[in-house]
Structure formats: structure tokens, C-alpha cells
Amino acid sequence: MERKIRVLVAKPGLDGHDRGAKVVASALRDAGMEVVYTGLHQTPEMVVEAAIQEDVDVVGLSILSGAHAVLFPKIVDLLKERGAGDKLVIAGGIIPEDDVEELKKVGIANVFGPGTTTTEITEYVKKEIASRSK
Amino acid sequence: MVSTDDLLKRFTDGDRTALSKIITLVENHESSFPDVLDRLYPRTGKAYRIGVTGPPGAGKSTLVSGLVQRVRADDKLVGVIAVDPSSPFTGGALLGDRIRMQDIGIDPGVFVRSMATRGSLGGLAEAAGDVADVMDAFGQDIVITETVGVGQCELDIAEACYTTVVVIVPESGDAIQAMKAGLMEIADVIAINKADREGADRIARQTQAMLELRGERNGWSPPVICTIASQGDGISDLFDQIEKHRVFQTESGLLKKHRRGNVEATVKAIVESEIHRKVWGERSLSKLHSLVDEVMGGKRTPRQASAEILSMIDGR
Ligand SMILES: Nc1nc2c(ncn2[C@@H]2O[C@H](COP(=O)(O)OP(=O)(O)OP(=O)(O)O)[C@@H](O)[C@H]2O)c(=O)[nH]1
Ligand SMILES: [Mg+2]
Image (cartoon, rainbow over all chains, first blue to last red; front, top):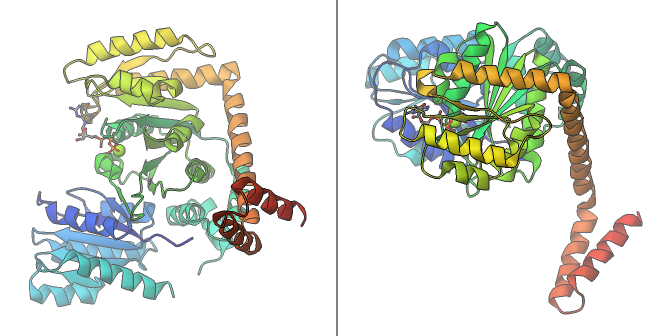
């Protein structure tokens, strides 16, 4: 049986908008993936716990509030600590160019800005996961 | 790649990452899954299994979250399996039950796993049962399975649980709808959720009346409880009724009978899926295709074609 790609779409931070996250979650579902959506206001601990319990291949983080510089590295660290450092972690939202490089250094595989199409994201995820399972 | 032995060792040491990996392996039917399930089986049988089902959006996840918190107050360990439908067209699924389970998200005594139906023909109930077995073996005292009360598979899952809670809401006609969908048949306890809305009392009375018509079954008549899951109202009443049903089933010997029925269903399902797998090998599939050509060409009937295949299987 073909292995399903499982993705967690999480919305850490305090801002109350999850339209973007929902659009991405739906697009990933339409691309044939199983998408666990956790809702708003997730702490890094909650995101990591959910990623572990759901055994997802991909963790997609969405944020608008500018707290990414603190929250995202924390999530990556916690995942490593729990023996789940092999998950593909990607991010989306409004993230300044300068921060993108920083985030990539700490282990966020890719950052998708506001102009990204959902197809770019789904294709990226498929390609990455396919190359990993080889 | 970690070895199965290593994974099982970590599992028995209480490592939640190992639990999660084993669930995946079982759910995906990876090659080691029969061996893993066989090795875990002796550890199963301790968890009490509760099914929660009802129409989409009735508040099942919110209610499950409340029940979990109630169970945690007694310091028991809980596993939750939240089943949502896969799209028949793309095979994808949006699993959103965790949204309503935020409060139990990082409690180390709780493990929540979302599962997509994956359109597996009848295999869903087995898959959900296997995952419940894994959680049971891990040491969870209670396993709660949430399914949407639509297709037969979903009802089968709920029914395989020892106590089935059916959740309905005070929308007009919902009790009748639930009756039609076969939900009332499998209910051990009924929750009228969203009791903050107009008409909860009326539907509670209606449901009660319908249940009286149905009559007592095996000495149990399902209680009807009003709940407001989003405010935590009625949860402890609901839990008390589940507990009462558990005690009733245990003392009357029905629990044992239920378990026996589940084992029988599991054995049959495994045999049937193995037969299916064995029957449709390369040789019989190519035979099938040539026979279909003959049927299309007017040389045989479908029944004669199947007789041909059956005799081929019997003969080997
Ligand atoms: N007014 C009211 N709303 C409720 C109550 N319980 C749950 N809700 C709301 O109903 C909506 C659906 O709740 P869920 O718990 O996700 O329902 P569900 O049955 O699990 O939904 P699916 O899994 O999608 O079928 C949410 O917006 C809840 O906040 C209640 O007692 N009263
Ligand atoms: Mg739900």
C-alpha cells in the first residue's frame, strides 16, 4: 500500500487569524495527504506533542504575529529532544527576508511567503518526502 | 531504520514516540505488523473501550475532551482515536478533531491519535480495533474512539466498543434521523448535546419515547443525558452513566460476551482478507481478465466465468 503523507498544520502564537493555515491545510488534503489541523494559539509544547502523537512526516507552521524568531527554533529543538528531529518542518506567513535565513539555519526546511501558491507548497512537500523515503 | 525489537522495547518502557511509530506501522500494514500485533496481544484486554458517535458537528470531540478530563481526575490513563473520513476522490483527509481537544493536548496521561478512514472496504473497523489494541497494550486504562455516525463501517467501530455513546443535537428531526441511520440501535448511552439550544428537552423526551418503544435489551435501557459539552455541563452525569453501563456489563457477563464477539469478528476478518489476497494472485487475475473478454464476446456468462476461476483455485 502506498504510504500516506501525514502533515500537521499548526498555528503557534497569539494572533487570531487562521485563514491562511486553513487554505494550506485544505490544499494539502486535496493533494491526497492526511492533514491534522490543530487550531489556534498553540504553544511549542502543544505543537510538538501533537506532531509526535500523530506521527506526521511534516510539520507546517503558520504565523503572522512576528513571534516566529522565538517559537520556531523552540519547536525544532523540542522535536529533536523528543527523538523526532527527522520531521520536515516548514513555515509560512509574513516573515521578513532576514529572518528566513536564520530560520533555515536552525532547521526550518523552507519558508513560504505571502505570494506562494498552494501548488508550490504541495509540490514541495511531495518532492521532499519522496526523496527522503528513497 | 529502527528494528522491531528495539521499537517494542521502547514501547514497553513507556516511550510515547515508540507508541506512535507502532500505531503508524499497524495502520499502514507494514510488513512487520502481524508480528508486532501478535507480540503485543498478551498485554491487551485491560482497557475499557468507549465509542462516541453521532452526526457531523454534534460536539463529539468537545464531549470526548470533557470525558477525558473527567477520567483524568481519577488518575487513569486515556487513549483517544479520532476517526475522520478520507476523500474518496483524492484519498486525502482533513483531521480536525484535535481543535476541540486543546485542553488535553499536553497531558502526559493522554494520547490522541487521528485516523483517516482511507476508504478501506470494511477494513476500517479492524484498523481502528488494532490501534485500540496498541493503546491498550501501552497501558491506557480507557480508550475512547470517536467516529462520525454515517456509514456502516463507522457504526461497526462504535459497536466494537464496550459502551457506545450516541451524541445527537436538538435540531429538528435529529432523533428521527438518528433512528434512521441505525444510531439508536447501537446506543448504550445517549447524549443530547448543545442542550443550551432550543428544544433540548423536547428531543430528550422524544428519544426517551423511542427507546421505550424499542424496549429493554439484554436488561439495559439506554439513559438519555443532556449535555453542554462546550461548557462542560453534564459531562460528569454522562460519565457516571458510562460507568454504570460498564459495571452492569461486567457483572452480567455481557462484557465477556462482547469481547468474544469482537474476537470472532476479528478472526473472521483476518481470514477473509487473507483469502482475498490469496485468491487474487497474478494467475487468477490474468485468468479473470481473459474470462471477462470472453463474457464480453458473448462466449460465457459471468456466473460461468466465476465457476472457472473457483475451480482453478480449488484445484491448486
Ligand atoms: N452551543 C453549543 N455548541 C457546542 C456544544 N458542544 C460543542 N459545540 C460546538 O459545536 C461545534 C462542533 O463541535 P465538535 O466537538 O467539533 O463536533 P464533532 O461532532 O466532533 O464534529 P465532527 O468531528 O466534525 O463531526 C464547535 O464549534 C463546538 O464549539 C454545546 O454544548 N453547545
Ligand atoms: Mg470531531
